Amino acid sequence: MLHAIIDIGSNTIRMAVYQIEGRTFDLLLKRKHTVGLAGYLDKGRLVREGIEKTVKILRGFTDFIETFGIAHVHAFTTAALRSATNSRAAVEEITRRTGVPIRVISGDEEAAYDFIGATQSIAHADGIMADIGGGSTEIIHYIGHEMRGRWSLPLGSLAMTKAHVAGLLPTPDECAAIRAAVEAVLEDAFDVRALCARHMVGMGGVLSSASRMHRLLYPDEMPRLLRTVHLPVMIDLFGSGRKLSERDTAVLLRSAPDRLHNIVPGMIIASVLAETFDAEDILYSDSGVREGYIWKEIIGEMDDRGQ
Image 1 (cartoon, rainbow, N blue to C red):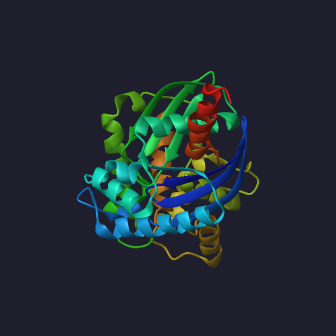
Image 2 (image 1 turned 60 degrees about the vertical axis):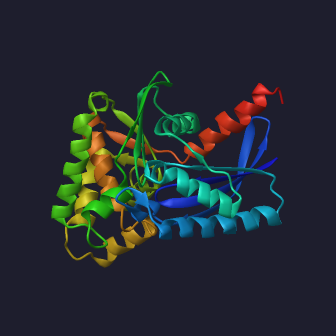
Image 3 (image 1 turned 120 degrees about the horizontal axis):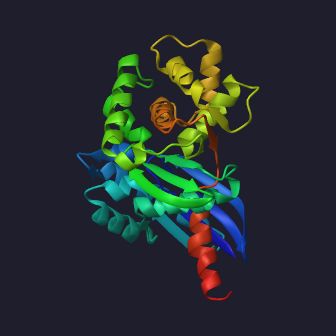
């Protein structure tokens, strides 16, 4: 059976089409629009322009879905719409105008989907997962491949960019302000601050771009693995205020073409988390919330029905 999964995130709106048969699934197609919904929050409220952009993109997705007769459509939204003060009204309007029912998933649900989705690629039995999104960061602590705790923190790369960065790339003072803001959030997150692990698993677009950047800058390192000792170097390279060399510009454009504005704030979040957890490395996993949703809400439901 064909299933279309629409993920309305803080930075991107994505549609992925999967063929799901029994307990196996294959990704057939993926489409992405970089919108930055978290940037359309004004005093906590999702403004008209953000709603209109979402409606336009979802209408394009539904045209595709109807053309190919995809009967099973699932749509959910995470931090940007979840945290908006007019979340309910915005979701109802978008659903009414597009015909796409949207589920607002909680931070705990998002973290659980992340863990389920990434379980297949966890290399170490014990560790910490971090999904750095545009509007929030989900943290999962696991021991013996079992989840022991999960937290949703108001640490988003796009939100940090909007709050602290005036230009395309941050200045050293703006980097310092972002770091201070991240540390302030962690200061109040006592349980998270107490976590410790040598190894982290990273998810989300920012860490995807950061892992590509790391590979370009450190070609001898293992693909998808970020040595946390290199994060401050990477942050300084693109957040120093110095003019970039052609080589460095090429690295940035190759690794983060859709995230030029928020890659450095995202790496600062990752760096502070790694320091807090005393982690040596971050292994990027490209399986996360969508794959976890499939396992829990689609395959799990079919298992419950005995299909």
